[in-house]
Length: 330
Image (cartoon, rainbow, N blue to C red; front, side, top):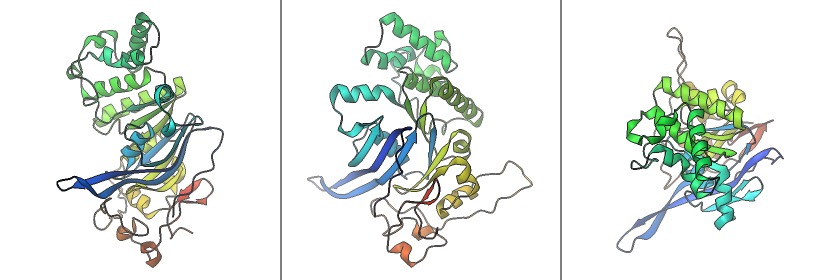
């Protein structure tokens, strides 16, 4: 059974419908396809204008693949990604180039995404060159302005990536995404590799930029505390499927899916006198090469019943604005 989609509204900037991405597994002398990694398997959601949609889940659940598929950094197997009424997956040539100007990404590893042989000022201006925005002087001025927006100075433009700390490199990644003045930015775990003190600085920069430029974020992370700090709504992923989607406050006050409850129980309480009751899941995450029949979470679920192993639950609106895929939620 495929996921149902949310009711699309006028304020929706991005609409993802039935997105699927399978990666082929090849073997043998002829490198024939012998299996498929079901990285993303029928996922639907919307992102409203000006909001931050957080996306959380264990490593390997498909979060990053969703983000890259939306921008066609990897080509989806099927589905549709509507940006401002245009299907990104059907665009070609200049039409695709135009949409990509308005949809940018901040990568998890800023050092790997920067060319070590190019000064960071040139990296930030690269998109401006590609899209032929302004004169050379206007591009330079915009680059300097953008660097200052993320807390860097004009003399930093002449330095190379290896001359910066991890936090500074992530600021450069933000500046590069911001230079084209996009409407929608995918933040692919932008603070997961940073110290806690630096994380808060980068998150505050993202929130300030969102207010100033009216940005819309898809914020991918595995740290629920970070997601709670920055998100308006939160989507929970498990093994290529979306299992829960609701507002941040509803999710943290009343999680419905047993997987979400287990994630919540792992959040540390900042008080040494208090202890949270942990819900430790059994076993390991199944392989996306051969996901379980029925609900993909049922082998580890503490409340699973027979139907959970036989039929896949529908992704439905259990209460107003709170979507969940679980047979046990009435």
